[in-house]
Image 1 (cartoon, helix red, strand yellow):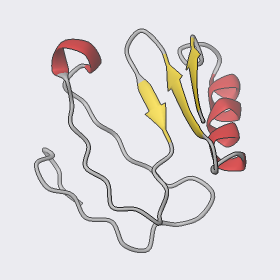
Image 2: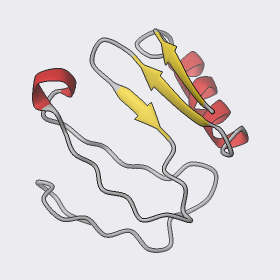
Image 3: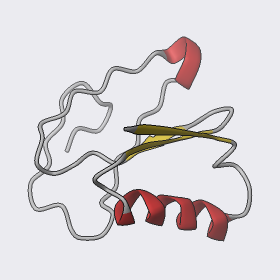
Length: 83
């Protein structure tokens, strides 16, 4: 099951962090948070992920940060500042 949440970002910071917390608490469900300029989803650590940016829709930026626990091994290629 996937849940798409429109208007979940772009307001008060504490509300945005609360919405990101929901992604972590319900990590067995694919939840995608949308705003006018951002798309946020949880990338399960049990998978390898490839992210393709559609700059005409999402803009030229891609940010990654750990939620719930530290990321012990993260590598990237193709970003301006690879990890």
